Length: 400
Image (cartoon, rainbow, N blue to C red; front, side, top):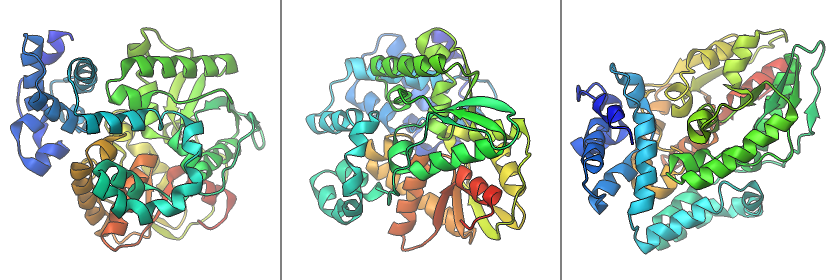
């Protein structure tokens, strides 16, 4: 790890109010500058102790501190590099090791996730029983969404009307298997806006979950496969509809040591650049838009989704209080740190409830599952949708 990255931090404290774990516990070592202090100790020769590993594990990697930092500290790189060191040097407890083994042998592999689809209807009912055996297994079951019929996209989705561009589309893992309707809506929206959409069938996991958890060898292997798939497809831009995937793919140059032969853009980012041609039909809805951390903080994409939603006739957009605070999903965080994730989810659900909105819109499947579960836990009800689904309904003139 480059000591300069550590020394860029002047310990000013601007990051503290935006850090979810500091907001929960008020502990200095569970703040960004506190963790950077621990990183410096390690770089100077202190071995990673179980206590240090606990503080690093408690970080969500939400990057709110990166947005808040006036000194430009690359905390995103620091925590990713530190997690690699933790995985190499820290010996985890058997139960923690077993849970991580399950998570990382399952979630980066869409075909394995597919085997869970028939059991999803039972998962929520089983959650209390599983939680008694292991909190992480209980959290996994409680988060399970109600899956729709799996829609297989063709290799090429043709533009409707005049072709304006050709783009690749990442299917993702959780998005592909648990939210197939989001991928279908994404392809339709791009086609209606004049794009040929190339969907390489050989694509797999982009490596995001592995990057965020310090599993660098697995991350590089998955990322390299993704690059090859889209390189063979010959596209100049890959459109991504999951915030965590998009943020990791935009950092492929740092992970792999070379720039991929294509650019990566979030769906809302790309549509805003492209400009509208398809007619927007009215959607008389009140909508609360949730900023996914890896879209707002990691990619700096905040205005574009709001602009797209606000352009829909009769749609009323409402802001969520404390929008910069993470919902607690954070990739696999809500599975590996279920207690803290639950507290953050409850906090976010309460904030969403104050808006009185009919529909919660997000651009990340993990956020959607996390907030929906927290709302259910609080006895509330709110419909959830992806930005792509709202756009799709408006462009096609159908109800959502």
